[in-house]
Image (tube, rainbow, N blue to C red; front, side, top):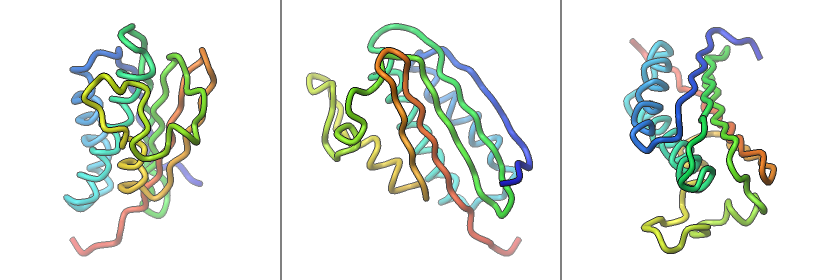
Length: 145
């Protein structure tokens, strides 16, 4: 698929950077003229992915979160959020609604479900001790200006 534009951002895994990641992705995606709802969906999915990296991937340690955002042909948005944290032992289990590795915290275990509901495609790859990559795609609708 043809890449029309691309942005890469690396942020430390501090909780304040969840908002920075969301803002950076929003600012970049806005050039594709998404609807308010589409932009909100993307922002929510990015928030969930970055929060997962901070809370679960790094578990109180600091590491980098890498964001890659691409504007593709035919109004498709590609977002990859990658960490080099602890990894996920069982991705299929982790993607089950309400599953969480931090039951003592106020977490619902719905992060992947939320990402799936707001994006058209979601792929999660992970290796223990190496980290996790979440790749999401969303095709924007065609609307009149």
